Length: 250
Length: 106
Image (tube, each protein chain N blue to C red):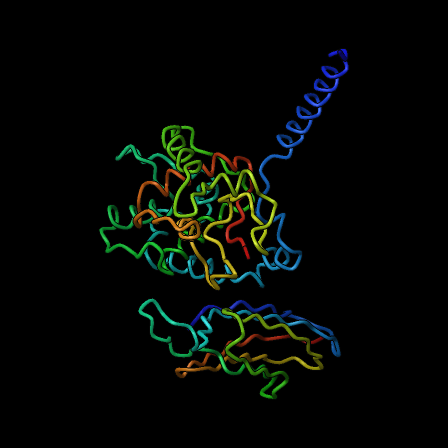
């Protein structure tokens, strides 16, 4: 009979190692997709004259003046707004995202016909407003605890024919490769962003739809509250990351 | 008129080589892709970019369907005198846009 003592000693050692590893991981915090991009793509995002997202920001600035937003709001007052969205809409007591707020302002207060949610005008306006918060850390709205819980459940729910949850790629295997592509941690800190694959500016909902179709599941219907709940969770998960709008992503 | 982003130095020394960067919003639809209804979308690209300095052509480029959306072009130029730089993008469906920037050479 061998003595159990050395074995116990070794397992304690392993435990300590695992603890240290977990602490290291925690210390690392969320990593923006920016950090895992190639130097060329990072340079493209950093230089406002090579970042095609800035074309949309310039368009959004013109729309902000032309569509009457500037009658009540100033661009300076928009600083920090995007960092705290999605927020709680007081009237409906439901979470609302930045594009949703812009649409609501336009329809309820300006009494004007809605802009298509993923159309170039809405994307440009959202990009312009979000761009004012560039460099500020994401601050999740503390009133959205319920939406965050729903969002986290969606994030961990296996979906589609491939039977995969968001977490299985973006938590468990972030940093590894899916075929040739690096799996990012999936943070929402640069939207609306210019994706090279799209050759255009796109919203977070478009990105989420892409992923849903990717695991061969039925995407949520356009404008479904599930997207905003998921966004509320993603923002809490990315707490402290800086807003990069308009980001570049492969 | 579509959005453009241009970086042109406002001043330069005589004989200095300056770098010019241009970016224009354009879908550069290749003419090979099917749309949502399954039919091939007609080609819509920028065919030619020219840069003129005081009405003399100093740089030109032919663009083809493989060029990405929102073409970004950068080139260098030696300037000897003050003048006006004119950038022209021409393409399918009668697309034509010209932007001008003054440059003062000391």
